[in-house]
Length: 504
Image (tube, rainbow, N blue to C red; front, side, top):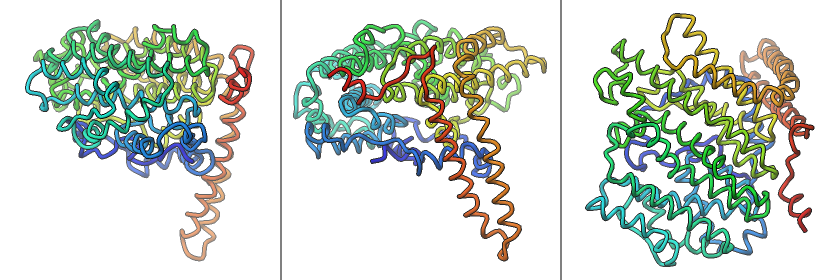
């Protein structure tokens, strides 16, 4: 019944050794277990998410089991966990009438993306383009269609066993199939545009960077909005929120591109816009920034990185506007969780030289905390407010230390804008969160007492810490629930069951 193993590597990466290109083969910068455990609030959140208030899967709901072939759906669910970095759990918690539509939408686009990403399987770019442009007429129209020899590991298997996905796709409502087919064709057209481009040194400029992000992520945002609308769980007007939907996708995609600098450069398909990075590269090569032993290259790399982070931050107002338009609680969480993960990742990347020597990721405990806190607008605004303040503090600290960053003023403006937009809603969560610290101190005092009084030194500390974790997790659940009440400035989110009952 749980939506997924949020703490496990399976949810994040699948089998990294079987991914295409450099994915999973570049060093990942992680913090030690001790460094992660000192963030007590994150430990509390992890315990809560794993044992007290996990995301619940709706795949076993009667509506789902009665409508779709059990074996084919089981394959789709299994392969989703293998190929998805982070979306499996948030997809599974969607309402039953929407869950499978989004799951299949994701897998269809992932299959298409696997074709685009394979740089060796096709004898020419023309052949690859032909497969991309016909995908909506082959994979989505022919129940027996499959493809072998393309992709690696789980992505390869997805294409090999695609008829199982088609079986579930064919059982979707006609409106959902129409949305998926339309977005698939338009995304394939965009991908085809970039197949012949030499991306070894990134995209040409910011407009091309934005255009690529639109095709591979902005269109996903549009497709999801349309699926939300046809499900009846969101207002019909959501299908027409094209700009805001696009910006939601761009925010996530740009965050990934910023974080994946080294992976993409090693792959020979990079996306950092040359019009930006060429201002900072002394050699005129995108790989210049990877030489972090060179003092000048190290300094220039951070300036380039900060400009791209700032460019992404400027999308936040539109993302917040989109989220404010949602009415279904489960849909809100589905949309908001990746967004808060993205702002946390941007904070982690900002002025961080590790971006140029490996992959930077937020702590798993922080991921759990973000999921727990993402229930409503006040929770989301509180998260954006905190990370915008964090980035602004880093920028001001560096500026005060004499670091000349050409993007400094622009960064501060973007962060200030986010803080202004989120201050009112965020303030509603501050007081409740303050309860966690005294509860944590009580628990830790208990742990300390148990340890010093023990006849066997240190042994009772473990159960004491577990009790502390459970106490804090319970408090986290209480605080999260208290922050879910509606306010005069924020429309109340409704559960899918309530919206369905109101409609009937």
